[in-house]
Image (tube, rainbow over all chains, first blue to last red; front, side, top):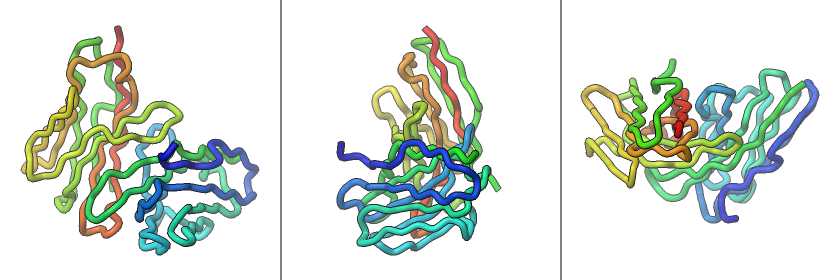
Length: 114
Length: 114
């Protein structure tokens, strides 16, 4: 499968625990995005990487959230001290090139905080 | 502030009928308008996209109509099929945001009944 891969697909955690999600973008895609989607809503932008540089972060991304993309390949999104309000689908997307080009989404990681 | 407003929230169409979903945007800087289709448990997948220099784009049974002066665009699905039952999201982005992040509508749940 050469699409965007996200792991794990599902994660259940207790409030206060830390969780980390992984995204493997399509090979050679220089742009990588994280979005969050709650039930009945469209995806909301969280953060953006161009290669290994994190160039933009949404105000939705509190201090408990951190994302990395070492060497411009895979990316991780960590949530510290999870809260029930963090329960959502976390989507990763990647795209290539300059300008507005098609963003390909992974299947997401569904987080449930109990 | 919701920058992309989508309607209706849900839509039921008979097989063979035309499904129409509408979106309105506020930011006149938007210059790329994609539509995504999402099935339960899956990530969004690009259906069709349009830029504001054209008023209509057609790909197979899917057509985007774009009205720049009204700041509105719509998706028409001709000859709707049960397999089209999914949630559809309109989105918008602009070159000025260097990330080309997507701003999504809240989605329309389409049900095509036999």
